[in-house]
Image (cartoon, rainbow, N blue to C red; front, side, top):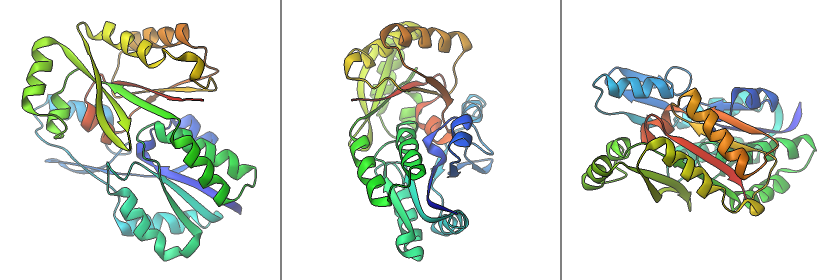
Length: 282
């Protein structure tokens, strides 16, 4: 039995290879449509979300696991360790933190729920840090202190092709959506203080806009840690991803670049062809 076990939500968007490498278990969110309720990433993917709307779907609701589901998840994971640190998506974006904290109360000090104040692979940096420290037999207090330090260094952003999904999710108004459509404006969203906010925009051809977005995110290369970079995407062509990785490598030499498919939860807010960059600042 391990001393400390690190777990997370499926919204961390970690590639399957890393989940297996670090032996990280995730609990699934739910996606509700007029066709039923589905487990995120397990029963409904990013591609399914895009297909649903392209075929006339009107609305999607995302739901965090219920308190009872968190209780069962924690109970099973505590069979593997003495303590558990569960890293959740920002409490300002979901009820998952509240539900997980309520469930953790059933286990005393054995379960600690950590509010990442991030989403998608911004959470992945914290998960990897927690696992490495746990493997080195560091205490839960030391791990939580380290997560606090990393939280302020993580930068997560997405560029989206249009504002249609943002409008459906209630994140922008109809006027903004129509302006984006008419003028080929591509919103860039960033995580700030735990919230997904409009950071800037790119205008014109989308492929060129994605490259400009990448250059802007990496413009202060000397302040970026080089161990790894995450490129989350909802749907994207092989050519687009190849060009983006080339652009990234020209700006900053990372030891490893991970491409990873975003969860259905993230996709329901960003839409198809959304591409992100998550990095760690020094």
